[in-house]
Image (cartoon, rainbow, N blue to C red; front, side):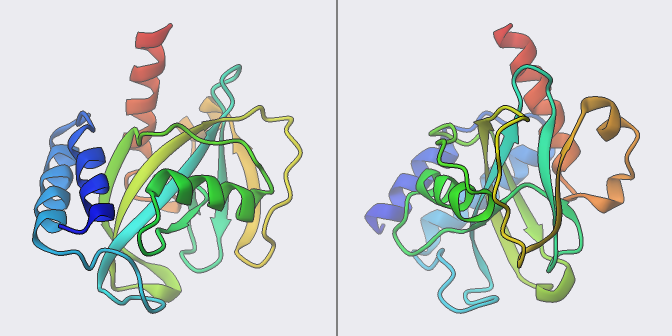
Length: 189
């Protein structure tokens, strides 16, 4: 197994599933990582057909608000993030994406909180993203410099706004992630 893939395999193996679907996604990801080293996107938008993505989810620890972007290609509200470069550590990807897409130099958690396997939608529909979700503690008054080419909008969502939002406008796993994040936050309080 390629050294960089072995690192991801260990990272994925350390994620504690929040529910049965995440357990299925984790099992799928471990099998995939074990069976191939071809896990990094080499050609846009979809070569190989399944590849690694790092989401970075900015969360204001004081308010529980979450920063999401209205992604041009996907047509959904998503966490910022992007494809893991060849041999790049996924946490480095998350930090790089926070800098490129938001102008934020803060580093996210070193380990992902959540993992999903999702068939993409929107302009680049039809391939599979294996996404590692990294939490970034960030104050909602932090100055941002969003990448205007990738997003229609960038905004902080309060917990109340998220509860009343249409789930169809978000990553299909976002609200499961949010539940896991809230459980983790309650346990650490």
